Image (tube, rainbow over all chains, first blue to last red; front, top):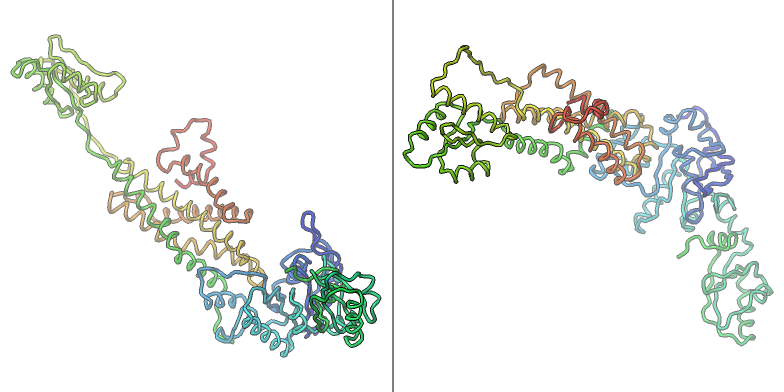
Length: 285
Length: 308
């Protein structure tokens, strides 16, 4: 179908976008390879939506270059739009039109396309090569969320490229081949989910609270602990091995005369990486 | 490949469906101007030339002078004669039931308010009638030919004005509202993300609006003709063409509004700001010639004035 098969589906370099006194995107570089599912993970306000709307050709950047499928929006926007599938954050459809009418309307914009009966959503109209999904599952119920994940995975299985934004780390871990963690308009970490998690140098995380509290210096001195940090009322300790650290922690608490209030452990996630990198949670809830 | 739909056609039909499925919009476009025309048309409908009521002071029921005077006045078709006692007559004149009070005299005395045009006419007619009854001859023979010019009644003035106002209102509102709504619901952004041609979207907005132009004209002109006998004096084609061009101008204004504002409230305020002066100044309900000369250039520059 496509004349030139570039290895890179989406590339941007030195992207900057300022709104009044806020710099939403601050010198961002990305490369999405053809056929991969790439995730932009970050908290609300990190610049994910601004970035993806620049890549979709909807927002003009203040600086930087965008290359999509080897061409640019300025070069031939409408030809490029034929090859894109886009879902915007919180788009409402025309109130007075039925779903079928809406799909018929949107379908008429594309030169080629499937039968309306086969079209499940606006995404798949026109046989796109690249899907841009901005917060695709925000506000969906769990079942719809799983269905949407399935659509993305099917699309990937047929060789499509996906760029999505999310603030759900489980979504990024499940769907994405590679993830860029974004904070304050910059990429602060990039890699496959396992790579990113292993960059924590801690496969597990211990969370606990005690009465009275244990001091940070004491926690740092525990075997296998890399960077203890607060998480609400709890301490969060990324550790290499539970077998090594948990007994030592319990001994320390008992030895200091404090009482353990709660203790839990889980395998390290992208969320833990984000917290370790920024000191803040992905979602403040 | 399956059967194709043309995007312009689809966009236009979507625009039309959005209009039809909004009963309130349909009411304001079709029913409201009609009700206005009917109400105003009946309120100001042209009657035959009125008889002016005049009173004759009749001191006693069988007063011969009063009877002669009343008889003379009654011969004038323009006067409606009533007889009163002196006190009743003054009362009737004061409250405006009669325009002129005649004391037969001699000498005959006319009581009237000089600032009332009808009273001045009544005095002239009454004087004429009494002088002729007293034997005055007219040295110069005259004849008058009465004409009624079609198209000079108020309703004849009102129907085109309402038509213009309607075209303006619906043109500006329908464009300003639907584009602003689409923007605030992010539909506009979603459409831009497709290979849709933007010119087709704008064209569809205008076409979708113009489709309803024809029923609008037909209904308003039709009712004007059936109910009030307001006929189109001139080319129907020209009327249609004028409406088309006028409507497109107002669609343009609507788009201009929608291009600047971000919320429905903003669009509504701006549209009112644009429409209000034209409702008042551009000769919908009364001729724009009545405004002072100083503002005439401004009035002439308003698009609705041109259309009316």
